[in-house]
Image 1 (tube, rainbow, N blue to C red):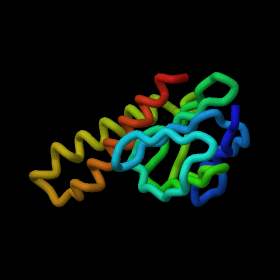
Image 2: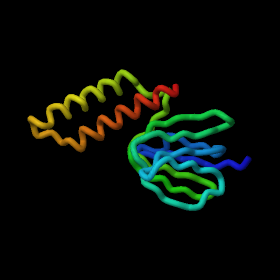
Image 3: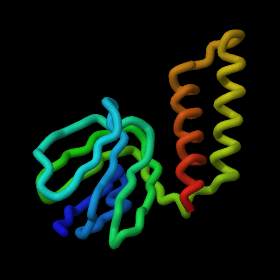
Image 4: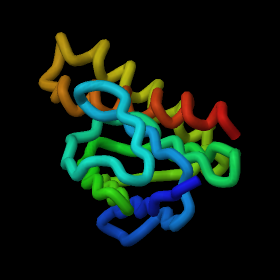
Length: 135
């Protein structure tokens, strides 16, 4: 079986690099995108979600923020603000962040709260909790 390389890059550097991926599944803004070796070149925006990658028959899961993916026939480069493996997610911290975001959204009607930022914080925390379940 042909394989494809994956590099997940944040402003702090690469958080995941693997040369022998069987399939990479991305959460694109238009929907889920599965990428295998030989895929046509494309660039796609990513939403807050997960990157699933199959290596040697086993899936690895990474929680990622919004960003972009560049797909080439032999390599996928994912550019995001943050990415973290399911087994590295601090679920207590993620739950606390979710609760803070929910409180901010409740207060947003009465105070000058940036609702967009609060919604994004809630979405990121919820995503981290969801991906942590794959640990």
